[in-house]
Length: 505
Image 1 (tube, rainbow, N blue to C red):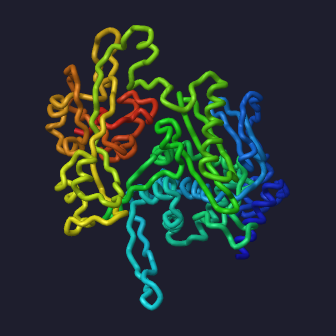
Image 2 (tube, helix red, strand yellow):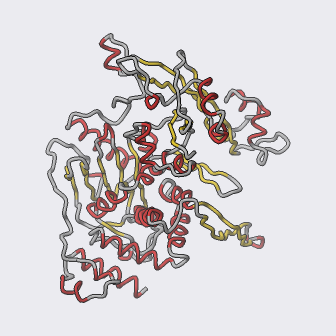
């Protein structure tokens, strides 16, 4: 407790500018005081947009930052510290991704702990211990997407070989290095402290510094932008939903970053978007409810995008994979092939009163036998219970438009989707690619493509990212995939696309 109080007082003095340069010079290198506390706490260009409307009455503090123009266009109490709840997990996530990039850990490393739970009532109550095993990447996903406190705590312990206090100290040291002088961390799981004085706290400007540092790593936005994700413990697979509803409502545009809530902190959100390649960061603290918080951030983004001449959040920004609506209205049709991609999607069905296997099968256009096969462990004697959760698979169709060069020539790198016949001819020598094929492509025209023997084509499956695709092929990097397939924005990665991958002979 004494060490925690000292850490908090050091952070408080640093934020108030009371730590002098002489103190830092005389301190040992491995102490918190070794950081230059004389640096100014506010180092962002504040250029308010007078035409921007924000419902300030619904937030205690916040800001809107234009990353492209490097300026804060709106703020409220941006240098005042408030409780931040689960926004704490952002720092744990930053330490994890930095350790991975430093080679200390790998995303596939196993994170193991023993979970204790009490079952039964009164005299029959007993404690049951169970082993839990996840990869570091799945623990990272659970902490950032579902804001799971247990996974955040275990990830922090994993980063310091079980010494939780060591990770907490690292969090505070890293905050000083990022000039987050008004930030204090007392734990990694964001649970409130016995006294409000020791709650994890920060300012909007400090959280902005942390956000900009996290945006340097593509894995952060790839994971934080997932509306739904799966995590696997070796025995079963769980589906988790992003607490940031904006990533679901505006998929492909809002790509992060973290939510938070405690009774003292209120509803908090750090949201990032790069619609039309114009990156924005919004931070709001202390809202009354999650819906209000999301509406404030959504309207903030929409109003500012409108002010600078861009489209609001929604399907208005031109997508290179879809037909140009402006050309369609003017009477000139785009040149290319229009395709329908069929994607097999996993869903969870909650059984309602009066439902049976046959009615559920009819609803999802499958057979009763398939329902039973997908739920062998949960369906007993064909009996279903109200509220029971069943796994079902359905086929969804997505329109994709593949443009053709104006000169009529064909370039292999511009053909992300191939016909079934070409898929077979290109991948029959590569069993791993054949096994990963999960999308069926229907096309009106056959595109003739000659692929050198040193390249293979990878079919993008639902949930695939450039990072985990690169992991499957030896010697392949994310930068190489982007360059080879002319990918500028990872949000354009769609199921059924064909990516050209250079493999070793």
